Length: 254
Ligand SMILES: C[S@@+](CC[C@H](N)C(=O)[O-])C[C@H]1O[C@@H](n2cnc3c(N)ncnc32)[C@H](O)[C@@H]1O
Image (cartoon, rainbow, N blue to C red):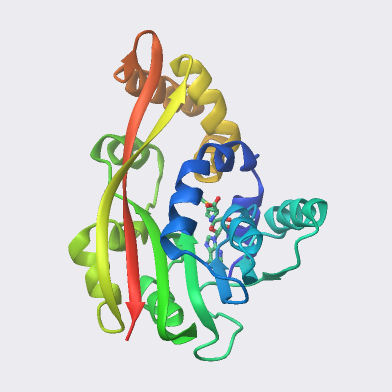
């Protein structure tokens, strides 16, 4: 995996965003219901919030991510709590585990970013034991955001998240190996003003920060202005509350 991607994911203050995903981390781990001693894998763990929850439940947890800077923060949190988790720097497309190694595998807005969704899906299936549980979250495509980003990214190329973000396409990726249940959910990106949301996202959301940082100052200001106008459209009682829809994909390995 490219060190460029690792630098991009590690180059923002992602923990600020991870904190806001806490209800989703809770929901995902509770859907997977890890039991004491079960082998649990968190793919693209970031700062480790899903892995930490599974370890608190008593599972034997492995967690992988390509960004060393995020793994370092995850490791520090586990050490503070005295939780033993096997943190590994690695790529979701080449999982360094034997076939059938896990009873439960999770990936919260993680594996969806691997550049080749077919390869990443096959890797998830490979490391899942027969009868094991899979839990993934994936953003639904947002036309509003897509149209803004596409005006500022020169060569956007294929967006792998789109393959995970509709019921039909995520089923195509996984149904050869898993019995699937797919539910649509909503998370709200909130802030006291559009400026506050811009400040959060341009410092904490790695892809947004990377895009903003890559633009020359004039274009960056245009990007900022378009995002702020977009968030103006989600004002409620003065503050911003932008609904972001996602899929909770649960699978049982055949
Ligand atoms: C939006 S963050 C989610 C992190 C974490 N799962 C959470 O819920 O907070 C996306 C994560 O995917 C990781 N990532 C992206 N592509 C990856 C790949 N090919 N292999 C492993 N990790 C990857 C990034 O480093 C980042 O930590």
